[in-house]
Image (cartoon, rainbow, N blue to C red; front, side, top):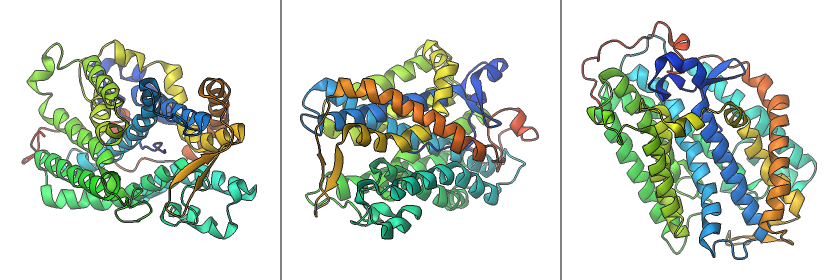
Length: 426
């Protein structure tokens, strides 16, 4: 999945010691990005790859019959939601700043679109073209256009056929396209009130979750390939993004009005405590696999919040500032896109689908432990090479499209004034 998937990072807002901001950032093709968020991205990618190694290594046999397996499998769900939540935060943040008048720089939608294309298209098109050119998994070349238009999940002929995890990239692209319209609608309805903005996002998240529950999760006839309310439609997945968008609102509100008084308390204001709470919730959701998709968001939210809100720094966030982990995080879009074809090539296990869109795996599984030892280094290595050869040259061409809180240098001239009239803390 692709959050991969971001605009500028937020090291300034991620900690509570501004004088150490440069140490909390890592460069990616000329941009400063948050070490904390990139480290979370790295851990999320490891979780996704591990879950898929478990899946292919066992070929669904006894996949979730023990709690340790459910934890490993749940790590993939956790990782995917982390990608979506971080995208929601990072991409909505400039729109929120502009909405409440903190930014003197306009939102440049042409640059926004250009940056999104540079982020996604070069690697995605390369991967699709290579897999189709080698005839992977019997894909008919007449179906290529569906993959290039990101609509492969809405047709039975192409759904989950070429590279199963690719569906999340299509959802990300839907979010990229609709976000400016969503932000405009929110600005029109809420004006400068961050409180109303937060309420709108919470309401939208609840509606999205309700749609997913009734259309996908808790129905005898799940809507799998429907483009509007199906399993891979933005409407039923928006609540993942809404959590990150809500964090963008909180980030701006706290920068305008100051952090709430309760953040000065020993536990409530500790970033380590927030991360620990998220981890505990994750392990609880793994008790039953049916809990993992809807309720993992309650685990993801405090973990990302600990990285982007001005909470008191602790050992957990300091670990997330480990440079080598953050550096691996920069490469995770490549790792994410290449890992499934690599795993299938290593194991010989392939995903198939029947007329009712029920997915099954065929082939001889290798076992989880053996496959992890072999496949994880291969996936990481190919991802790193892919990042430097394919992604990085294009990422260096990105340009700022709106004031963010990425670094103080990036937002000179956009210093937050006193709270604008009507701006309410969320």
